Image (cartoon, rainbow, N blue to C red; front, side, top):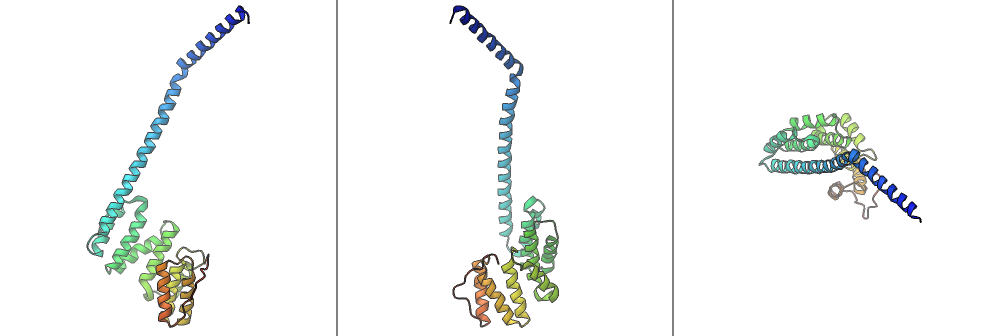
Length: 224
């Protein structure tokens, strides 16, 4: 390479550097703003996350304190105070409060809450749970046809609370003297893969009490 070519390359490089420096002076603030924006957004998201975590912990502590109150009536009153401030968790507090009201013999208060939830815009799982709890509280005091229809809906295959609804159907059958029907339902509950151990144990006890035979080695019926 000649001295002339080398000189030209050096000059070209210097010009390139000058242009880059000029661009940086002119537009460098944009990169700085972007970097600061990313750092600020990350910090804000972390702050929001910590705030949500702290709020959830505080709400959990308040719920525990409410349920530690002496007596179901006091628990219901304490939960009532929390409910309106619970945001998305309000539906869970309402369910707890309904249970506390029922335990304190305030059947009408519990049913009012549950009926309201069952027809609200809450998630279907909460509406169904509220409806089932209301059916359990009303029991045989409810119109038999309406009770049977409501339980039949909740006991359909694929429903979240199918085993519990079937247990209630069995109880309804026993109340009506239909022991064979009750036994069939209880065996289905015992064999249902969705049934909890506690529910399966109750079904077994009722089968024995009705003089029925408990399946020796239940093959759980998946999807039922």
